[in-house]
Length: 428
Image (cartoon, rainbow, N blue to C red; front, side, top):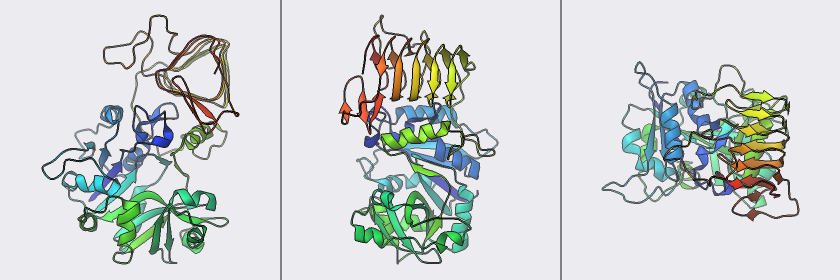
């Protein structure tokens, strides 16, 4: 789309996703065995015709920088780009980004370099498909200064999201960030006709939640960010703009998930292996892009695979895989049984180690991947893990959240951190 710039906020710490975010930012976390979360909004931009895309980064951003630079290279016959803007010191400021709005403010001299009439601001860690061109079209037709994409949620989800109220015409009259008071939540019940007028069906009581997707008129964005005391869009900029500016809600009723916790990450991944997943990666005409790798096809020898995803370069020999995801270059040995497992795979095969690779393993460390005769259930295995023969990892419902050198437990799910070595015969 002409005269539209997209800004993706890609600098989240993601503390609720520890240990997956101990060495990487939240948008850099692997998804579905081959993608990263940042691929979702970038792919949505490309598919929507938004080809001027800036990604703002700050925390543990090196791996995401490498991924974006290797993946999103437009040819010389287009003016499109995906550019990375990291927090930087300038004569005017020497501190880090203080919030979402502050990050956009600090980079305006770069993002506003091009002729932009509207600016689309996106989160870098949500899972959904959206045609942003339709969002911008609705924004322009409404004459809005700001348009917020909103999603209908049930009451149990309301306290952890930004809620808003809108009249029958969709104009936003009130916004509150993560309300905890039941009386306040009650006040934000959504009118059903706000969705039905757009041909969207919503059943039962719903609340309008902000999706963290905003369209601003470019001049309005500059004016609102002139107040350096306002550092966050949801907490300050947007609530303060209501009344003075025309703020409009854009209802969305497709699939949308905030991948904010280990439980939500785990469930969103394993939903992909269902016969009819809520979010189908195989939907025609709207691909998700990621780094292209020159890897061999996955090899499956004498194994049973049920309701699972296998990514390129994997090798499964004499194993049973059920309701699981085996990521890029994933190796599973003979006699092993994996059930309800997300295995993120490896950045390299054994023998490909080069100067600059991360942890150095002892000579007697087990090979990359999962060895022979292992039994692993309800587990996330992060990249480059080495699990020896006869290892048993089973759910521990009696154990509260746990942090250790070789494993973490969050929301009842065992996580094996990146690069962990687990010796043969270990039971966890």
